[in-house]
Length: 179
Image (cartoon, rainbow, N blue to C red; front, top):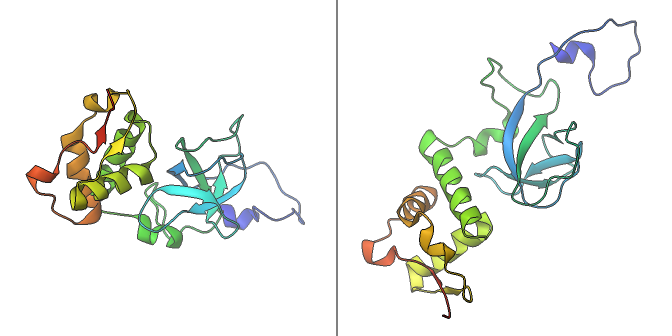
């Protein structure tokens, strides 16, 4: 196992070439991150990460450029930190971030919706909440691309992520244009 090699420490005894397994997880950047930079979760329950010295791993060190906000990348976990390994691993820092299949899929749907509409995941969740609870709209000028977004899937994902039932008459577009 990689912890026997002393990865993350200087070599102090004779060693030979070897191969290792590294636990990795697909995550989304909240802010610009550099290859090899330590990162951790923005908040429990999602796949979004930011620079954090106490994070469980590092940004893919082999990337040739910085990761921009909203880009997906591999987070490399610290050697020897996973608590189970079968190529389907567990890690204490991910405990709150290992939702059931429905929640994981809902996060991906909401991330795709947000990307299609040119907003962040957080903004999409905030706008959906404002519309579902109070009928608030977000004016987007003359852009009408939001009309092509998959609104039914977004509202279904919102319900899964929040545990809130949104009545059919509150499941409309929360963007509007000023055309």
